[in-house]
Length: 422
Image 1 (cartoon, helix red, strand yellow):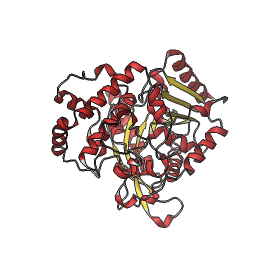
Image 2: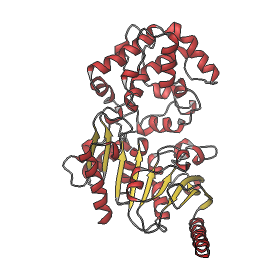
Image 3: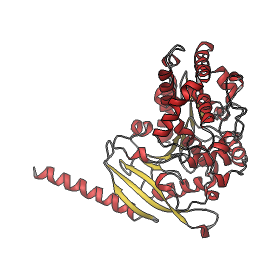
Image 4: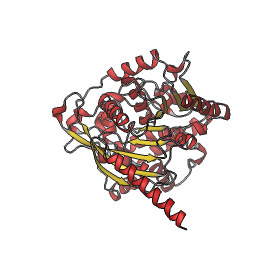
């Protein structure tokens, strides 16, 4: 019993030492222990960062990082999250590579999201370049605690953030694993529509499109249910509600393929108004188009330099009230004070040049049926020794290493294992 008590005391002391070591790092202003789950220790950390890395006079903001500790002798994952970090606080959270290779995690909340939103934010400082500087500073800081190999990885916008981090800071980490990350050419990238016209099978595409057309045919009957939902959820919009309905119908197909929903789950065209409305509202709620959503900062980035996707009205000619969906991102999502913002292709050109001309140890993972694969970076791996492109057959935005067919999955795992030993 005395031996057990001694071991517990040693464990508590080690935890206190790690917490103290984090607190001692430069710029740390808050450290909060969290339930650790599969990790030995876990902390929510706030640190001070410059608002603008090119101008210290712009001031500072507090950025959130979630640290999940296994041991100083283990590799560390830098999660380049493109959004808020709230879900990483869950006791059960663990990224697949971290579980496979028993790594630490330094999970970085993106600037201008959730707790990392500056007071009175100046949108000029929400840039990809500043976010890359954030990641470099955080990696450099925590490398003092974790001296072994580092893997940068993110999902979706986080995957794009992994690639832009590699672009601005080549070799900052040892391995990169961006999942389902787009590299868009413009505010409305023209590669999405052709992709969606060929996705999956003609039979499944027809089921999806026929459902969308039926929604538009019944629009007048469905609008009271749609309006009631918006009232109940206290939603407000920058465009008329009937336009919001049309955009929900347009978004439906993109969302279905993105998340891998089986078209067989779509209600029959003879289903009741209530069934059709319920299905639409669960699949693509108008919350997405409402003012004040949690992803407002993302839409600012998309409009300025990350890009997004267009909507194709042609299949619904004669049924849809919208005359045009051109430039919808700016009209619906961007705050009024930024309505005149122009898209800057500098980031796209810089990322494309880096990915084309360099060969970092990078695994690119995409889903075959995911619309975000259309502007993916699979082309960057052509003819390369280290860069590898993996596609999950029939896969969606949920594509991961562990969803790949066995041959690809084992190759990806073997590559990471090899690189960690080099």
